[in-house]
Amino acid sequence: MEETNFVLLWKEHYEKIDQSLAINKKLLTELTNQKAESTMQLLVRHKQRGIIAATFYLLILGLLLYFSIADYKSEKAYFIFSILAIFMVNIKALFDYIKHLTWANKINYNGSIAIIQKQLAKLQFSIISHARIICLQFPFFTTFYLSNKWFPHEVGIGYIIFQILLTGSFTYLSYWLYKNHTIANLEKKWFRNMIAASGGKSVLKAMDFYKEVEEFSNN
Image (cartoon, rainbow, N blue to C red):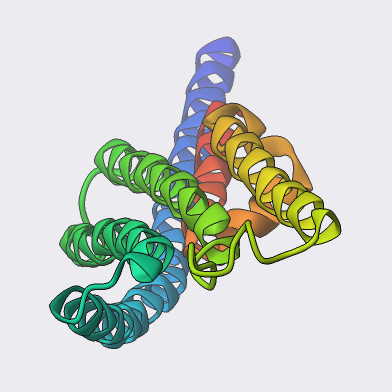
């Protein structure tokens, strides 16, 4: 009889522990959802500002291209080609800003954690892809001011070497950054800081919040 009572008490004790764990998990999930949503609002505002800035930037670049092509002269070839390349990269950037803003606003923080994590991972991958494309414009900031009217025949060998080294170094930097913008480098501090400028910091923080919930559930 005493053994039966002991088993019942033990069973009741474990049921209370399970209930307590379930309540704690629910509270932790709700708190995590609130923190993740608040953090992602920073991303939303960042992308909204980015859309406005990119639109004005593209308008300026577009006007420069229009007037340069309308009054085309061969000495403007470097300028037109460079500005066109920068323009195309930033068209893609504007498209990405709109896409990321749309995806961020579609996340339902009251839904399944697995779905939220999947949406955050998708957004994170897209932000990294966006950042690596942005890097491709760097070399063209070293060529837009050139003109075949004076370069290279009217400058000394010293300037030619300087220009080759300048454009070459920016080209290599662009290639190196493009190559290293991968998910595998997310554990590296320099890379996390770099994609933070594209809004990656907010997504990383939100994903870390949900890792805490997973760790609690697995313990």
